[in-house]
Image (cartoon, rainbow over all chains, first blue to last red):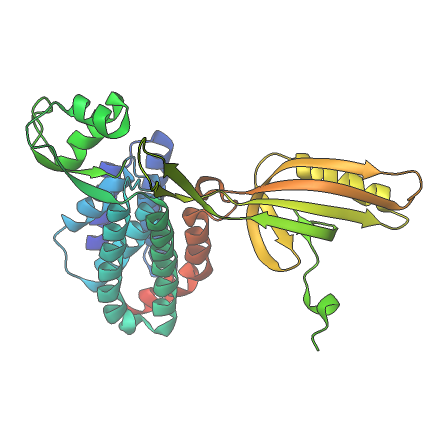
Length: 196
Length: 153
């Protein structure tokens, strides 16, 4: 419990930038140190706050995965954090939302298997939360445009490609971010883009 | 035989009930025809689903028809999408685009309305945000589950 609390406090201070939310993090961390029912309750509230108040919700699952802790309690807490983060994150294309949904389901499957030690009520609670998150992601996926592979044949600047694809050169940064290109002036001849 | 008057729903918008004389939902596809010069056949392209619009000929009747009518007009004038229930459709989020009253002196106690709705898109769905539902699911069980976990530590 202490180890999980230490990890979660560190993670929340890394992800949350808002001053008021950071004050809440401190208060919840102190409450969690008391242990017992109320301590675990505060730990869960801290997990919720971390997912809910993270400045960049898209970065949360990766940040959670960087943590080197294999205890069932940490994985349960991590699922709570990720469930709250994924419903706030932005998904530019259908593909992104589907990938996030698969990641949440895979994470939840592991936790469901381990949460048996806490009883059926705990599993039902986790299933309901993961269910809401995956349902939301499915709905988001249905509303987004699919991602497509674009073949230009010759290297072109990202602004020109964005203008050709969407009629808006301002969306060049989307192409650069999506393909993790370091040289936006010479884009790869084959890259991924949200369908125009 | 089926008793239609009992199996159809009572229509309402934003919780304000009204009676339906006629309803005309319009659904379809946005199809563009490319008519190429000199071509003998035209190409058609499906551009996706058309936004659903719903025309309703509604009415309120009875001794309190004026009160019911004013309530319906206020519901239609309020900002944002809300739940629209029609006799043979399950509820869906819709914007009210127009609400025109038709009261006649020879039909006292009966006020007809012509309503026009448009189905609300995902971005404006009311109270259906994932975060709200997730908070509800979290709050429902967090106390009990915390006690169960604490017992195992």
